Length: 227
Image 1 (tube, rainbow, N blue to C red):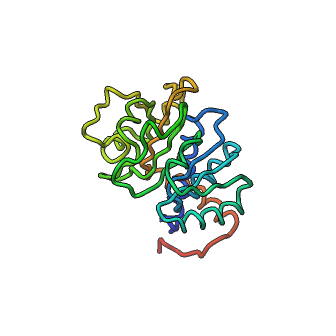
Image 2: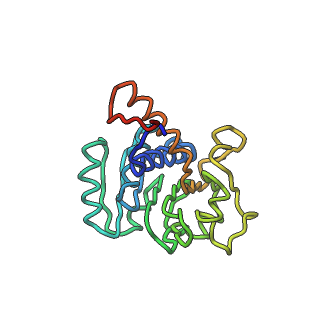
Image 3: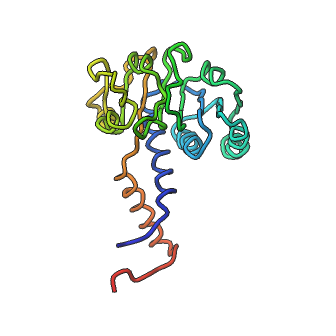
């Protein structure tokens, strides 16, 4: 054993970075208006991480608990110099968004074709366990779908609906797109979706970076694990 760390924090950070990487890779280059659906920890980390990759003009925020939206905007407006709009209805948040990021506990789909505009990108993080859904089958069926892991996507992620057949989708993994084996978005009119379940091995990668910096900067409490 080399170190003990706060895994919940590391997981939140790496999920934010992985999601933002997928969002940036698949969305249109000129996409700058972002809708955040679900203003919890991942809503924050996804938006903050995405700001490392591209400039953001406007952020539409929707949460079923309006107080969460208010708190989200109060906190994030201190970190990001952009325009925030709190929306009372989901449709209001989505209609002008170029990028939609969802991080909810929903067990029923809530994003339908008539709610989004042409060329929209959606990153769905809430569909990370069996029985959780955010994007409707009709939207999935007309989209290019990229997952962090396709097998996990079918087992517990964006593709888990048993009524859906893989043959109707353009389904790839983010690693294939980043490695240029797959195209991802082919034109500005396509709807793209990044289904991020979360890959545990990424925690090890970020933990190793933290460990090295902690040793270098003499940060933390030191113990002899191997006596």
